[in-house]
Figure 1 (cartoon, one colour):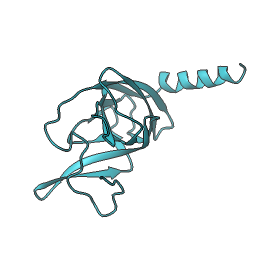
Figure 2: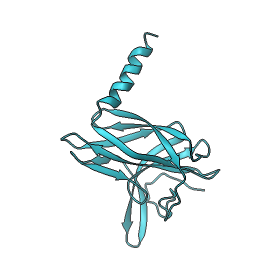
Figure 3: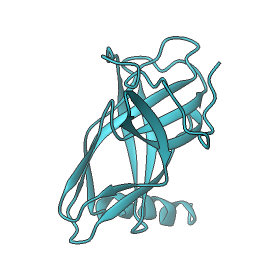
Figure 4: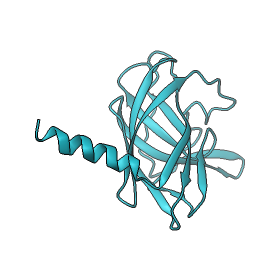
Length: 160
């Protein structure tokens, strides 16, 4: 019990004093057998310095990656990035067809109505534990479905 109290206090203070507020967060529902999904949200930075989202953890996937989508020639390409910058006193939207969080190697289908925990880790040392709702979002393009139309040579994501 003595070890539990500091852990609970630590978890509460990490989120309570974080300079990043999260809104409109959700994870895309998947059909059975889908290997990936994605998480989307708006991150608002109340600090006077930029903060970076540097990693994400989740127990529902083998790994998580930060991704962006950029147009190269006539093709939209998804690429893993090391971080996503949230400007000082600004915000960044993680959305289909743009910056987002990939959940890779899912442990099973993610169904609408479920809630999934994600842990966001930021460059200022703060972290946030979130319970995100799962939504059945009909995608308007393959990038929003978590599909990769083209990969950079150094991209490690494999599809079957």
